[in-house]
Length: 135
Image (cartoon, rainbow, N blue to C red; front, side):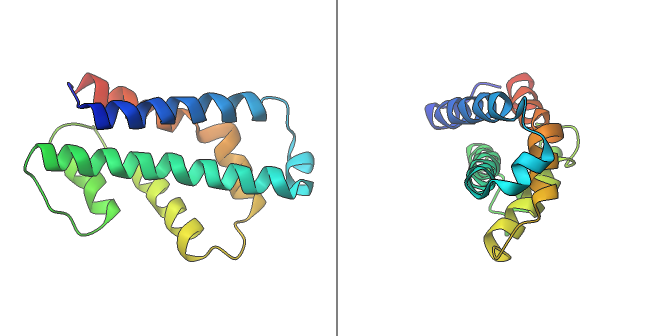
């Protein structure tokens, strides 16, 4: 999909953060992660920003296609499916749910959740970008 400079800039930041997290978590085990408050906070913030990028890009594409508005971030992801931009709303709606936990139940995000995303789910962000690029 041809996208504008705003989307391109957001994807550049997504890629930068993705590489940083992948490099940082390559050799971090769970015990180290759990005991390092600063690492957990940094991870949480970077993941939140990455999900915000996914949401922003979805909303931008909806606007460019005059297909909105939508009421929620989850609806924005579903609208991309309707527009044929992405194949499935999952795992992207799961990202939105994670973001909602971070934003609305911010007291403390379980370290296991953060660690699992950082170690096992980062490729979902790349998949989102790839789906947009190939739409």
